[in-house]
Image (cartoon, rainbow, N blue to C red; front, side):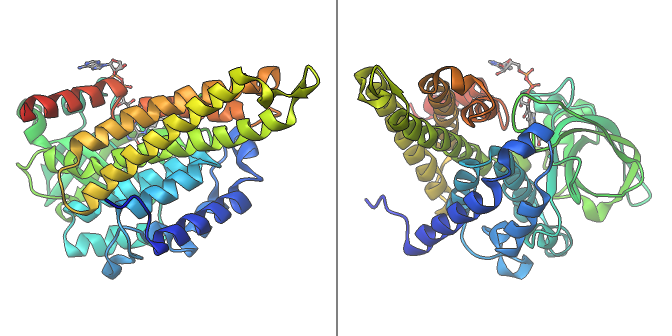
Length: 381
Ligand SMILES: Cc1cc2nc3c(=O)[nH]c(=O)nc-3n(C[C@H](O)[C@H](O)[C@H](O)COP(=O)(O)OP(=O)(O)OC[C@H]3O[C@@H](n4cnc5c(N)ncnc54)[C@H](O)[C@@H]3O)c2cc1C
């Protein structure tokens, strides 16, 4: 049993940590306040080769796998969770599906620009009436002239406003339920694709969450990932790895909030001494650190299993549900340790507190993760 990162992974962690502190640290609060996309930082992540992690060299890849992607997500989210989710959805979700299901030509066309950081990817599954029950989606893909005409409206597409490419899920026949659903790649500027609205959110405010409208939007058959008749399952399986990414993001948010709380507890004085001298706060910090460490172990174990081609679905759901709830637990206490100042925008813990919540919701809610874990347990037992 070896719990240590390789030398290359340690170097990657150090490099991303430096990058995040230098490029995102000074601007994270302003990006959040103005709900502004961190264009400069994302461009630099591309230049550093971080967008290519986990992809084959032939398509702009720079080595590594899920562990390396998760290291990036954790370290970036420790400073700016919104930048973490932009990377996660572009590389691990959108790029991940294209890498898993795409033909060599499709990977050349769509994955290479994502891996080089030239395009940001988005992923459009959710609809107003189809959230946890994604297979009830209504967006239609009607066969016409060697391709598909897409009609429908998608909710909550992360990166939807900036994306060079969107993987959108539509049905060729609603009666076929999950077997009728196909993923189609739609490039920015395709006639019939429009960004109808960008959500005003509680957290992750520097990341756009867009409502995308498809009206008679034609894409050629060459833009379909996988075969008709395969249904949605292969695409959803390709998504499983990104649960470790959301877990890594939650670990990063929790660690970032903990770091701030520890510094504050040492500096803030009440009753003539630093507040960290009070055992009540020592116990809070001890519990916070313990939860973070447990969440991190679950997260990287799930990623490690995935990188070795071993079963990891139960472990990825366990990591996501535990890490997301840890982010909630830790950020609430980080605000508490800051007292009234933690409730103001003068300190960053209120941002971590707001950003943490959605890790329990997107990429499958905590309730849906528990259902997955239970299904796996029932199969095992
Ligand atoms: C900031 C943000 C970014 C997002 N990014 C994307 C994206 O890039 N692409 C995309 O496609 N989607 C995205 N989503 C959508 C997200 O994945 C969904 O919001 C999520 O899957 C839940 O769907 P819902 O909101 O419709 O909630 P619902 O499915 O309506 O759930 C409501 C509540 O009921 C519970 N519930 C539902 N069914 C069950 C059940 N069977 N058993 C127990 N409890 C149940 C849920 O857990 C939840 O608590 C994003 C959402 C947000 C907020």
